[in-house]
Length: 200
Ligand SMILES: [Zn+2]
Image (tube, rainbow, N blue to C red; front, side):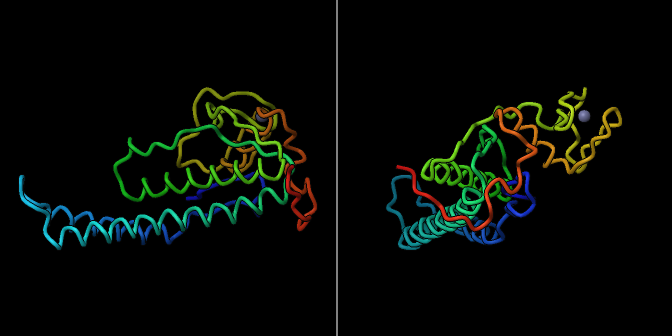
């Protein structure tokens, strides 16, 4: 599972492990709080207040780590590209129940925010793209298949036009086309290592 998938393998962002460890810690504090929850009309115990403080601290730490990872990654993406298309989705924070899934959504949200901020700061073209059908459209000929690619299928293949590329890469290219950008120039638009210029 990746937090961000791009058209260039070198810029993909794998899901950070620290998020999972920190999330486990948060769950532990949640359980502590539930156990120590004061009865109605009773003052909170010292243990409850302590657990609450620890939870807030752990929460802050996770948020900071996510932001830091997101910013470092965004800086690399912005350095190497002139124009960026970002999927305009809403992470489904509330719809999901599993902690791992929540952590993954929060990481995606923080990463997207960092990328858009960094792109604008450095004067890059940043376009939001409607996310519908990105797994159904073919990046090479533009045709739309009847059915969405099942999640288990990692490769997008079409016999009609001979397209065959990793699933997420196909989607990323479809997004570039939608953003009015040229997917053929997706890699190496800017020589790697070129200095970042601050936008006025
Ligand atoms: Zn095709």
